[in-house]
Amino acid sequence: MHREFWYFLGGMAFVLLPLFVYLAYQRSGLSVDRPDRVISYREVDGHTLKLHVFEADGENPDAVVPALLLFHGGAWQYGDPRQFYAQCRYFSRHGLTCISAQYRIESVHGTDPRAAIQDARAALGYLHRHAQSLGIDAQRVAVGGGSAGGQLAASLGVSLPLPGESADTTPAIRPGALVLYNPMLDLAPCRPDHHLVAAYWQDVSPMHHIDAKVPPTLILLGTADPEVPVPTAQAYCGAMQALGASCELELYQGARHGFFNRRVEDGRYFKATNERVLRFLRDRGYARAAGG
Image (tube, rainbow, N blue to C red; front, side, top):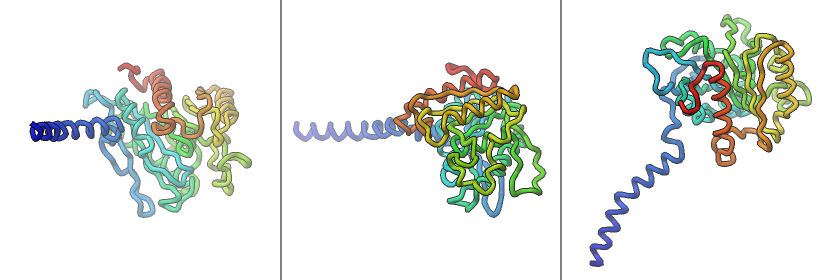
């Protein structure tokens, strides 16, 4: 009897252990946070830059769908496309093809934010040129990003010039909408992160290039963010609205920089920010309803 008991426990462990591992894997989100494909969009200075694509779920293979292009944060020095994997999978389930883009950063490529702006422009241009093969609607490409990535997205929205690439002939395509997570909008002297762009800040500061053509914009910001003070975002929206453009500012009380990431504060703001972005995009014809 004693031997049979241990055989029984061993058999149960053999059956249940893989199940527990599988459930833990599912709970971690790693099982779903992988792109459906990774494609190269630019070759520059010996580097291949890639787009991590999460294709819209449940769509007719012949249908074209809206797209959301996202740029990670990291002060133009660090980070990679994995930051937005979780958001991309969420949005793909609501009818968008979501793309998390790689771009040149200081720690890997030895570049500064001007190179990142060039890459952001190239990524958006690639989506427009290859819209048919990607199955996306070129007229419904929204762009977003977090922190430094938010600055890149905003730069496309205000159509900043391409610093350091005077020979570039790529048309200045603007996104259809902008989703900015605690974005670096004002890089003027005495502002956070000015020191990173001090020699050329006027060329890369979205705040100083706002015009009436900036697409509808949603800014998500924590009230306790030391990098992006609330008055900065308010001023940005105010400047847009004064020119007749649409800007919405969603504030999250007590939240700090990077609050929207899934692994920050156990995902406290992850679901709420996703739903807010989805509502913004849905109202503009970019996504299905939250229950869709």
